[in-house]
Image 1 (cartoon, rainbow, N blue to C red):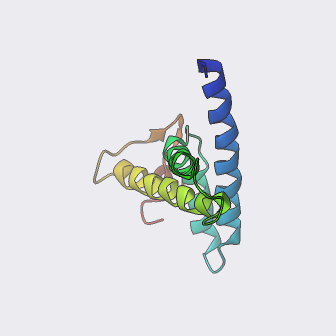
Image 2 (cartoon, rainbow, N blue to C red; image 1 turned 60 degrees about the vertical axis):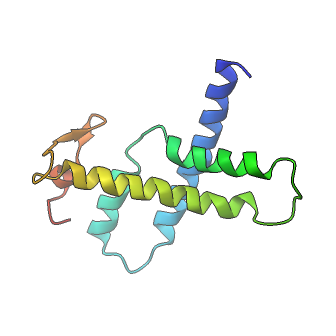
Image 3 (cartoon, rainbow, N blue to C red; image 1 turned 90 degrees about the horizontal axis):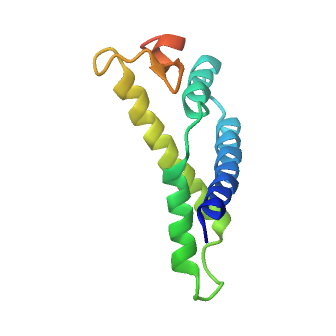
Length: 119
């Protein structure tokens, strides 16, 4: 597998992760709309999605050569997305004025700039 193949695989997995992150955000009910918008702003603001992809590839590596019975890959996608959500949470908090006080992340206003510090 060459570099082009790896880039193609990463891109395909990124699509899976992005689709499921959107699904998870849309499935959540009872969250005030402003807070949900802030969550979407931070979570869907780009990124390579390496952490969830590594979770998926770890699952694939351990599953290969074993029985096909057990946990389906689709169930692991939610766990992989949880890792990305937790990572995003850490970035939001790191950007706050009491921490690094960053105004931009990936060329976009940070959550506390786009919304407010409390949100």
